Image (tube, rainbow, N blue to C red; front, side, top):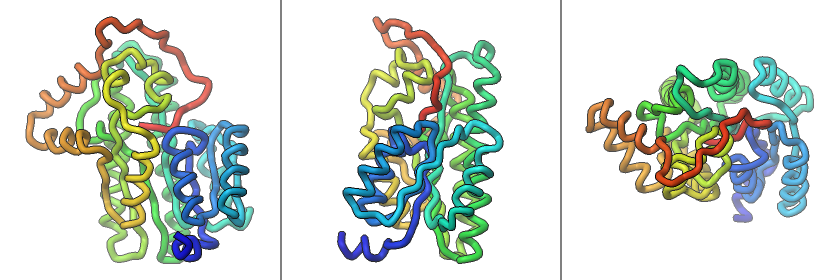
Length: 285
């Protein structure tokens, strides 16, 4: 561990959605291995608390907190400019921030969905473009994009969310091919249903998926971190999730969609929770 910390001394990771869920666990893992941190989220107070804790515990050179609503079109460029003007070189980019909304597409709020597309797709694409160009000039860097198990199948009742995550997986795999002759790697992490605030904030806490077996964020983050460090193209976190994604390559698409529809239906006996727009976009899949 000490040798790894020395190896990473001076290196910096930027993590979006760093205030909770997977993002918080990523921050802990990188800090433990000696990386300096740039934490990006809307939750300034939570990020500052995490920053103080990790900097003190691991004696990091610097931890930078950037408050930003990444669902705004201007945010990616603003984040990039704030970081670069501070003289910080980003060696690892973790595109983790994301959100979903529950319901039939013909009933859900279009403005909310446009914000989700910005957050889940446009923002990581723009951040990747900006920081990857810098990495390419140095011929060194790592990028981790948080996709999802639903990247591999249609996701009825969360159609926009599923589509955005399918984009992220395809995007990541294409970049891997484009960068195969460089020292830059791109890894897609595909978690399944996890024990975070995602379902509640998406208005889906009453569903079977939200009330079934859930992965722990720390375990998912560890899988993603190890895959990133090993230069893997894709990692599906969890045995059952691996089996599920494997099955999607065998059964007809309509069967996979029907199975997902059942998982997203209301759990028997569950009280329907109020669907509301969150005051903060959660980082998750």
